[in-house]
Length: 103
Length: 103
DNA sequence: CAAACGCGTAAGTGGTAACTTACGCGTTGT
DNA sequence: ACAACGCGTAAGTTACCACTTACGCGTTTG
Image (cartoon, rainbow over the protein chains, first blue to last red):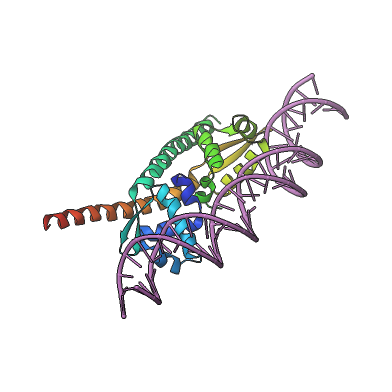
């Protein structure tokens, strides 16, 4: 699953946002979320497959943290969209202005 | 539905990408996609609700085009993520370097 | 070494959303 | 005016995915 689809789910976006804020363990995340701990685990797996998070095991805690890799891909695709959309939008505005001038 | 969830679906992302490339009618989109025309219509409704596209009726054709508004919100949220993630990532790298120096 | 912790995963369930077909309304062409 | 086009929407089906409970494995603590 790619980063787009991974962050498409609201719960997963919430988990990711918390990990962006600070690294956290699975139980820690589950405590402040309206879903069970296994559910969080499953979401983390998806985020990991999308290269959006990384795990580091310390003792019996699995510390998850946000990772730039997946986000970078997302960002480049979004910027590509943004560039052309904005260009076309501006071009359309200028076109309309020109149309107005020749009433 | 917000822009994140709207673009979370692959088919919808495909439709949006085509509209970023150039404005198109519903039938035109459906012809080059593996889904029926009504399915495209339903996806376009979602994209419209997320302020990602706009419609302009010309004759009996409904011309859809990508619109910056929904994308702008998405971009700002993503940039917020990106900023802190990258900061934390760099900070971690420097921390590890410092740890290495004091072996 | 036993008990408790932290977690991943398997199995099963329910809800939902993506899709289909069918239909009806406006618009264009003959 | 009538037929054809372009589209939106309603209704129904299906597949998937988010979630739960149950279980088992490694790790730490007493």
